[in-house]
Image (cartoon, rainbow, N blue to C red; front, side, top):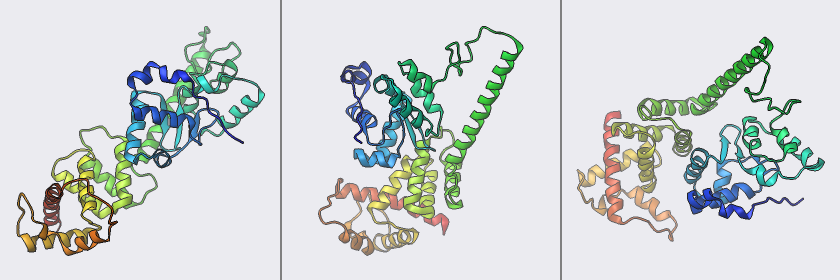
Length: 332
């Protein structure tokens, strides 16, 4: 059966969209409202990798855009553990009709939601009462059962009930914090990944706020480069007293450009540089590039063009190689 999603024409006149959204924000938000994973309730499961594939953006760009929508625009929430996204204003335009088929569908989809906090996030912006009550249950008097401020009774039992709710809330918060720590430490990953994360936290994370974005980047680097080379890049960053992931990303980008696959490649590259040049100049010559790299370069797609000049490439290579030399000198 075909699925249809409503996007109101007022979307283009909304002051927030007009004044705060960049062109990529508008495209990304329309994607969230209309992609094939959307559900009737505005809460659905989707991976960042799927979003990147569908939109054509890089994984890093998707992380940045989602961070903007979560923390700046405050229009969505995303649970990195359950891979669920919730759209704040979904119900305002898509849940404005009632009836048994709609209610049955909403009930069924709500039962599938793993992060129940997302249900309230969407429910707060639903106007139709018979739908809203499915997201935020009310007692017989019409009061929100999750609202602690709505009782005239001040007897002991109500006070005890409020205390129990508060204790439950604190317990749930502790569980969420514990789960978050497990996620950031690598969860069920092996000890190699945990060693990388520990080094990152001890040497590059101190003094700045730990973010899920940085941890996801480290995870991506680990999957691509493995423990040894990633630790080498982290140690180079630590020697430069760099914080976060920016310097690490730059080092790995240079290594990829010049064909470094493992520490043996790096050592072989370093030795050939020493044999041919003896030292680094401000303008390295082309003949210091090692044979194994030239062979790899020839095997690349012939139509691929570099986005930087040869002089800039050589300058970047010299800087990365000097850092690698310093690291290898300390590890040998």
